[in-house]
Length: 259
Image 1 (cartoon, rainbow, N blue to C red):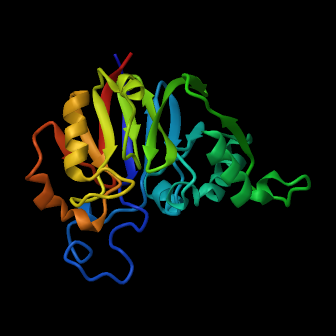
Image 2: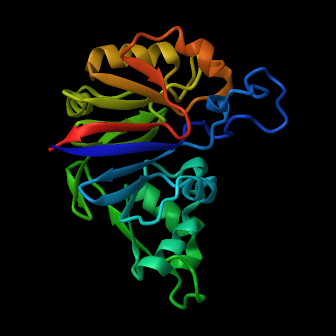
Image 3: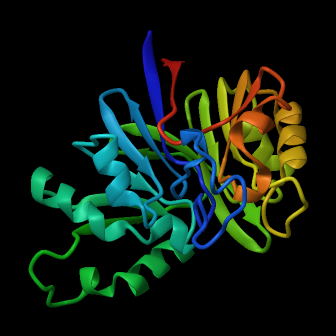
C-alpha cells in the first residue's frame, strides 16, 4: 500500500517560539523541539508534493527540508502567519516553468490579491510570482491529482479551512467546528489540530479543548500544532498527554497508509 508523508515545517503560533524579546523558560529552552517556526506542513502523496500554508518563515522552512518541487499550495486562511511567505513560491515558478496552483476560500484569495497585488497586475514586473488561484467551496476538489476535502472551522468569527486527504486531516486556528463538519473528520488515521496554550483563548482551542475534541472524533493518532510559548516546554507538556496524542515539533515526519 502507498503511504502519505507529512512533514511539519513549522508548529508555532503567529509569533513563533522563541518570541522576540521574551525571556521566559520556554523561549530560553535548549530543547530543539521548543524552537517553533510559523505553522505549515508539507504533504507528499501519490507522487505529488503539496504545501499547506505559506507563512513568513517559508524560505527557511523550504531550504531546511530541501523541498525541491511543489505541485500545489492549500491555504487555510488569510492571516499573515499563514500567507506572508507566498512570494517565495516564485522559485518554483522558475524551476517548474509554470504557475503555482493555490487553493483557498474567497476571502483568503481576495487577501492574497491585495497583499501580493504586483503578482496580479495587468503589466507585471519581470520575476513576480505566477499564481493561479482556485476558490474553494465545501466540496472535495482535485489539487493537481490529489483529492482533498475542505473542512470549515471557525476562528472566532472567521471561517478557516482545514483539509482532509485520505486518512489524514489538518486543522489549524480552530475554536469551534460544526456538527456537520465534524462528520468529515471521522475515521481518521491521523488528525493534526491546533492547541495554543493551557488558558482559554477567544479564537483558538486550548490544550484541554483540543484533547476533548480528539476524544470526540476518535482518530488513531493526534498531533497538536500552532503552539504558543505559553503552553509550556515540549518535554513537560508531553508527559501530560495520553499515548494517542502528541505535541508536534518542527521537522517531525509522520507517515500513514494511503490507498
